[in-house]
Image 1: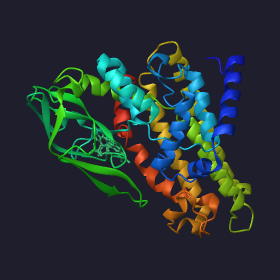
Image 2: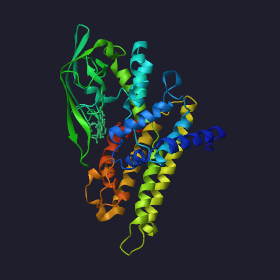
Image 3: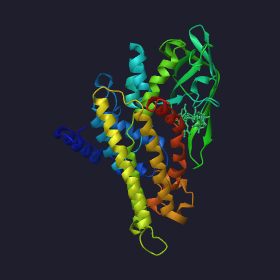
Image 4: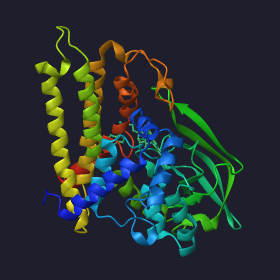
Length: 402
Ligand SMILES: Cc1cc2nc3c(=O)[nH]c(=O)nc-3n(C[C@H](O)[C@H](O)[C@H](O)COP(=O)(O)OP(=O)(O)OC[C@H]3O[C@@H](n4cnc5c(N)ncnc54)[C@H](O)[C@@H]3O)c2cc1C
């Protein structure tokens, strides 16, 4: 594995830096820095998405023929590092990351033309309707039914934990169209073209940090044209599994971890320990911060190895499970250090201080305003995109042969 950047990659890095300098406006940057969850505030994220789209950089993982930049895995990594280093807003991108590659592989020519340009432009925003109450890790047990009625399916049931369903205008979902001999049989993958479709209701779920990110979605005789089916009827599990590869392995972890490390360092430079010394200068705290940095560096090596494999056309296999486990556990460690460093200043909950344009004084200093929301929201990092226990099962089977 060659870790040094080639001259071409260095030139690319300069190009990205120049683009960010010219296009990431101070308000976008401030909003990015104040993000207390996985994604930036929806409107901010979409503003940034459109800026990227104008440059042809909104769908970074897509090939050129479908409107992507056709970047190598290394270029994508460089882009992610540069964006997180300057707090570019984290865009809600399930369309780009998940359903886009599915449409490219399984969609008809008409479906590709209908969805891909709109996803890249930011006009079509998909949310993910996979999980149901009782069907999360055991996804194949899902019960939401779709019955055939002429040219339509009629959907009844419910989906849960649907991130940003209240902002999205489209949904991709898994529905049961037949009872198979195995739970994986009889599932179909559908696209819903409007979250305003009659019979579809979105109800908020407010998280521990006081944020509205996830929802429960109810279907009461929701009609969806059969032409919106991706792949064959009853063969949706094949499509669903392909999509999960992109959900779990599509994005680099370490750029965000390095950015979070810097956030915690900043808090530790400002805050003082009991004896009056800056926290960053106390051996106990500095040692734990250094140990976490080493973990990130180790993870980066795995990540670069995976990128190197991908660029040679090899599937990373169980390495993506290892990355998911280490990435999510390390971010939780950083969250814990940030909250510990803030001490009493971690107590006030001031969600309004994270909204764009807020300029009133806050109890918690500006540099710590996202520490607690991130701590609370990232509890979910070991659950979503396949829980860490499930990832450990994958490693046990695929690597250890248990
Ligand atoms: C913030 C957040 C956002 C989400 N966004 C979306 C979204 O947009 N769309 C969507 O479809 N879903 C979404 N999800 C749902 C997510 O995919 C599920 O929560 C996840 O798959 C776990 O399923 P579950 O919640 O039903 O828990 P369960 O599957 O019931 O698991 C409960 C516990 O049992 C453990 N467990 C389960 N099975 C095994 C096993 N075989 N071996 C060992 N341990 C096991 C799990 O690890 C977990 O600790 C989101 C979840 C969260 C928290």
